Amino acid sequence: MNEVNRTLYIPLYGKSLVSKKGIILRDTKAEEIWSKEGFELKGRSKSKWLAYNMAMRAKVFDDWTEKCLKENPEAVVIHIGCGLDSRCLRVRQEYKLWVDCDFPDVLDIRRQYYNESGSYRMMALNATDTEKIRELPDGSAAVIVLEGLSMYLTNVELKALIAALQAKYQQISVLMDVYTVFGAKASEKKNPINDVGVTKVYGVDDVDGILEGTGVKKTAEHTFTPAELVGELKPFEKLFFKLLFTGKTYKKIYRLYELRSGVSGL
Image 1 (cartoon, helix red, strand yellow):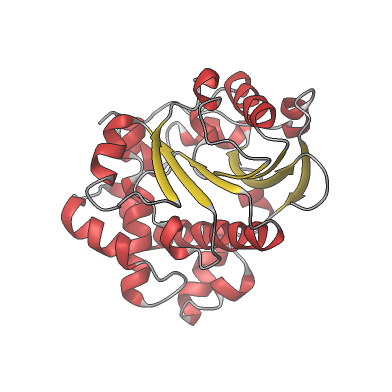
Image 2 (cartoon, helix red, strand yellow):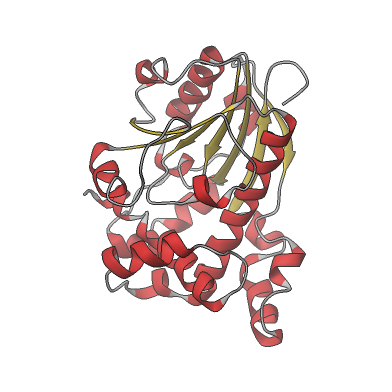
């Protein structure tokens, strides 16, 4: 498994940790997988503050996915860069078809813990291979989860991915976290992903520019740290967490965008 793929263990650890604590996110599958696949994390990657942040991000993606499925139950859910994440189990809203996508070596591990069914599939997919996007399941609408992915793609590759997804489906709804250019530059030396060997990431300052000509528009910006989730922390933890992961400084580094295309209804 290469260095980029190894980054999947950082959010896995975070979700396992908070699940055991009984806060933010209930994820018994993360607990199970981490107990068998986990290893000794180094430096910032094992920080409980980062674990809280990763779990809150996951919960925001979960809630958004549920909302999209309530609006359009027929939409196909496509999670690109799924790693070992259990969103397909955490989301309570029924779905017609969910496809978790990642590199083959990641899916080899994933298949040890997840079983395919009529409504759940796994598919080997490199996000930079836009031809492969055409092989995704057909449908008129898709809910696209891009969590922790964009920073490993250049702006050109990210635009090509979004354009290919839009070409595949008449309507898409996308939730995507991005580093800013400043955040990406800072992350090359001060980021938990460095602890698993990743030193190069990419940032986005002009998301509207990337979307130009794709038929997709930015429709909203979301917070990674909703007040109700931060409120689950202990008083001291809450205060320190806010200093680290909320406010204007954090937004200069990291953003969360919702993108949409097609007619109303998704």
